[in-house]
Structures are given as structure tokens and as C-alpha cells.
Length: 68
Image (cartoon, rainbow, N blue to C red; front, side, top):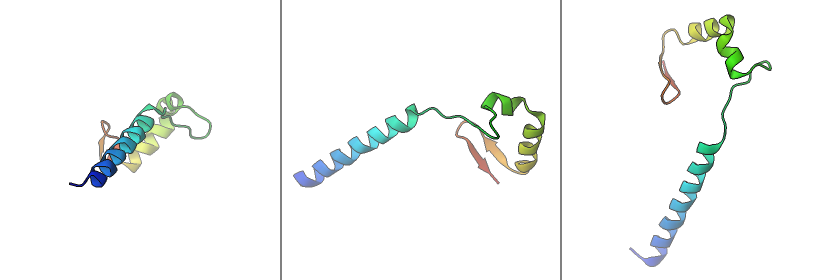
């Protein structure tokens, strides 16, 4: 592999590492109608609505993915 190709790969790897660090460190939260995540979890109407939407789907909470 040429020196130029190696430098391009090293640069892309560095950019990827920076993007990963930024995306991991940003805080994530829910806000619907001015409610916080905890408010939404405690709201029985909201949780019932969410359950009815994903009733026929599988939910993997470890990777935050819904498969229908």
C-alpha cells in the first residue's frame, strides 16, 4: 500500500474516532409536550400508547431498536 493511501486511512480512522467520541458523549433525552423522560415513563396514557404502537413488534432496549 502506498504512503498516500496509508495516510488517508489513518486520517479517516482519526475522524471516525472523533465522531464516535462526540456521539457517545452527547446527552440524550426525551421531550414530548414539555415532559421529561421520567414524566413520560410515569404517564400511563403515554406508556399505553407506546405499547399499542409496538404491540406486534420486538423491542431490543439494549440497542434502542424496534423490529416489526
